[in-house]
Amino acid sequence: MLNHTLKLNSKLWNKDVGKESTRVGFGQGLLKAAIKDDNIVGLCADLTGSTKMSFFADKFPERFVQVGVAEQNLASVASGMAAMGKIPFISSFSIFSPGRNWEQIRTTICYNDQPVKIASTHSGLTVGPDGGSHQALEDIALTRVLPNMIVISPCDALEAEKATIAISKVSKPTYLRLTRDKTPIITTEDTPFEIGKANIVFIPEVGLASVGVIATGTILSNVLLAAKLLEKNNNLKIKILNLSTIKPLDSEAVIALAKETKNIVTVEDHQIEGGMGSAVAECLSKNYPTKIKFIGVNNRFGQSGTASELLEHYGMDVQSIMRSILETINN
Amino acid sequence: MESLTKEEIKKLKFQANEIRKSIIKMLYEAGSGHTAGSMGMADIFTLLYFHVLRHDPKNPMWEERDRLILSNGHICPTLYATMAHAGYFPIAELNTLRKFGSRLQGHPHRKFLPYMETSSGPLGSGLSQAIGMALALKMDNREKETIYCIVSDGELDEGQSFEAIMLAAKNKLDNLIVIVDRNNIQISGFTEEVMPLNNLAYKWSSFNWNVFEVDGDNFEELNNSIEQAKEKKGKPSVIIANTIPGAGVSFLENNYHWHGAVPNRKQAEAALVELENNTKNNA
Image 1 (tube, one colour):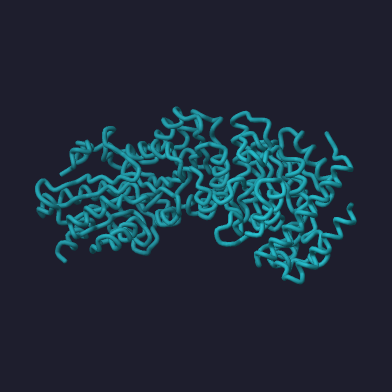
Image 2: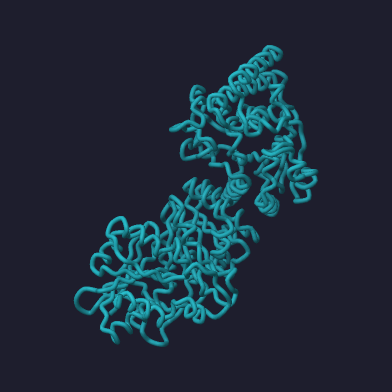
């Protein structure tokens, strides 16, 4: 059952659950943050409409910089603006930022410890028809390896909005991983969000859980649906941790879940190697060695298709997630 | 426009020669580093730190200072030596270059030495950062400060340079002055053989920049071009400074071998004798 203390969306299980994209959540959060803080500036590499930075750019044209299709320049110009006291948000697609401009992010932003916020949309397989060239499945690995960096992958539009506002107030480089498609609204205005704090969103009705699932990003909605079915059909006791901040990792929450369940499953719309599951494995192997089942993209590139076709093909639709969780119990 | 007096030029020449001596000593002590570009840019750094920049070494974080961004970080011995001679930190500290625990990292790291405006080393991103600073000044209607950026000629091989060059012109950043160290060498050879840059003045002007081309060892020409650049409205300015790599020591000059090499003890001693003679000849 849902953890009601978090005041999650009570309509989550309905077929007509409200949907919105995390990029829209980001756009709205940036606008709200910018109204309150004059130091916030926005820079974009010719994707202002697609990344929803347009909400900000339309309202504050004098604080917006259009750099053209030039992601390396995008990152470094933002570093220079941060050096002068600005709080720059840069937006593009994840495949280009941090994909194209990783070294500029490393040297001019992280090495200098400048508070540039890298807000990138169109991450993961759910980009869909654009195909494998545009489906960033490596960006968590690229960013979480960088010292000084905060990495956040929100589970829905509301969490994306809260995360955007929260990171604008923290003087650190940050990567915000966003998606294109409209996905179910899991949280509510009243659900707490804190950078670096993971929340248990699903708990057994009674007793201890026998499997702990850790999910990041919008794929959490499929994980929740799978858990609900497993709870009902298989009487499985499951806990789900929404790990929206991947770095710094909420080790306490991860270790506590491993101690209770002795059985961890990680789920992410990203390569398994180097992603969120790897971060969990690094934590657990040091503190509380636990067998982990990694659900994600297994050393492959994406391809064209609808988001749901692709999630099914790569093993992240509700049925596949259920099967994978059951395998860990039967083994 | 105010020109330099003869007395000022004489003082600057003396100072640049002292900085060159420090560069030779620190590179010999370090045992590795980049000699040619460091020596070749000593005059320009001297002019900037001892005449042009609005700065205060006793109050390095002064909010209204001019900013100088060194993009080609490998010539940091010049930056460090000039800053030490200008009073930012003790000249004795120059001997710690590239050593463990030193504030003078092999390539500049601002976290170690915060008086520098940025960290650099990987080429091609300094100009973008300078543009970010110039844009921030424009947004805040701050008109007193000027942003200076030093880039090397070989560095212009990096495609990011042209992303930056286009953006500065588009945004009419007349508070930005770029100086290109046109010394015609890079690590594996002459620039025109490794990757021909051809006519740099033509290239920059076609991107709608205000362009000057000067002799890098002519203090008067350099200073006049900077003065004119500051007065130019509506366009960023670039000064293509034709410099001599290894300048000041005959056997270091115009030889790309010295891009990434340092003198041994015998060579360092010979270099210091030549530089000492320069001081005497200039007296």
